Length: 78
Image (tube, rainbow, N blue to C red; front, top):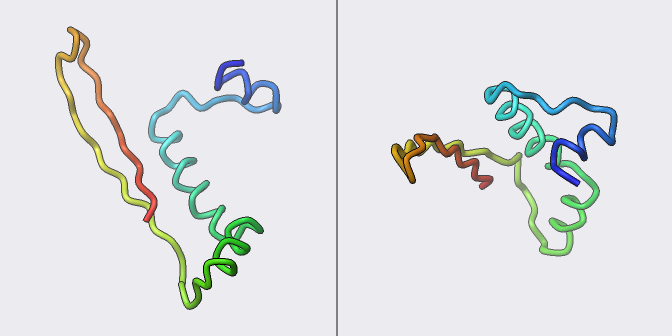
């Protein structure tokens, strides 16, 4: 199943706008901060006193790679 197929199977439409995709990716990082899995991980690893998480967005422009210009956006979670 394709990535867009997974969205469709869950009754959602994959956003075509790159800025909307980026916004949703960043929201997913922040929303996951207080998930049960994240809380359990921090307990097991004895991580305390953190106020939140961060998202670093880096853009790298690569031109004429195999004759096709494109832009690569890297999102790092720290």
